[in-house]
Image (tube, rainbow, N blue to C red):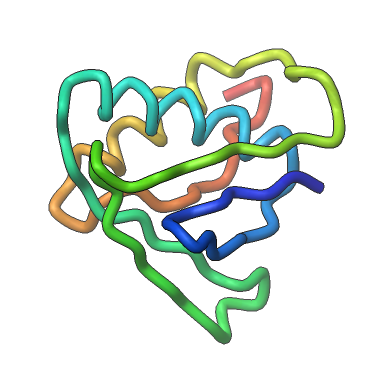
Length: 99
């Protein structure tokens, strides 16, 4: 299980390494373009939802327990699509390999 650390002092959100790796690529690509956006996180059961504003001026850190996993191009595109939507970045399920 990895962690996404946001702000200073940091607030941490536990996210599994595979998901976190995909999120990191999306977040970094948007920040390289100086784009700000919202990022919504929910508990696994959906009982609690939080949203943060991601901006080039906010401290971020991605922490992993394992090496970089193989990246799914389709999942990455699905996450980019949510990040570019009015609702902002949110974690969507990884598509199955056969999709």
